[in-house]
Image (tube, rainbow, N blue to C red):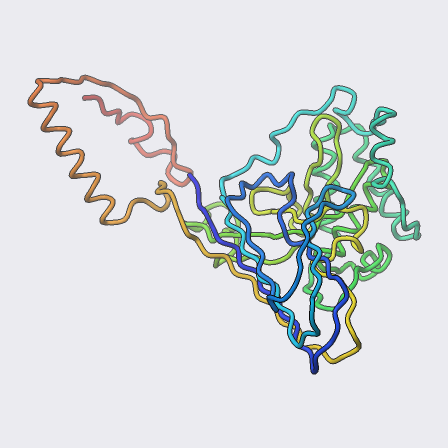
Length: 354
């Protein structure tokens, strides 16, 4: 089952006069290691009188460097990503034998290659005490350890929408016990580094689609299709590679997490950056996700037209089978048990054979 969506992200800067723009860096193309299948990507920039050069930064992220040829009064960036929202098992990875439980030590050459991702930028008392609280997770399998730390941080820090620029220090986030996705992500990065694990900050798109049916025994999720810029953390585990952890939800990154930029620090992952003349700016942005293809499924079956075509084909095949005197005998037993009707006869004794 696949749902293909179009993610449209528009950003606009309107200036109070014509201004000069220094070269700008745009970091809004899905990263090479994205597990979500990307069908297409487009970037449209206005004014059209500009020069664009695609690069990859020192960490392998895609980067568009844009140079304006004339002074501008408005700068617009429009992104469209066509992505396939096929369910991804976030635990579908292998781990090297020596790293299967925590703590472990990286092999010497691996540790050297990951040097930027071990840098401890903060050593405040609240962060130190928080890391000590996680000692109880020592000895767990590495998967259980990652899940436990991510969930513990999710339980400790409440989520808030924060529009002002910048990222809280770990001390600020822990003191307030409140933060945006980028604040919690940076706190998790520093936490993992204090624990001796290589970790990096991730900026990307989060896509959440409304479920076809409300859940019977748990939360149903978003009430409408939704997308926005998001931030999370990735930890490097030998054998598995980079594992995405989203402290905002307390879950591992799945098909709805599309990484754009992964760097040792948040300062290097801003979606758009560059210098301009001093002026007054009106900033606006929008994010939307549109379903452009959906495979039929149990929870959202065929349309009336599709069903009519299937029935017509079935009638045609039946006619051909009867003409050829083809006969079929089959038997079966129930293999499905309803979550809210476990004792019904249809799942226990009322077997149907024909």
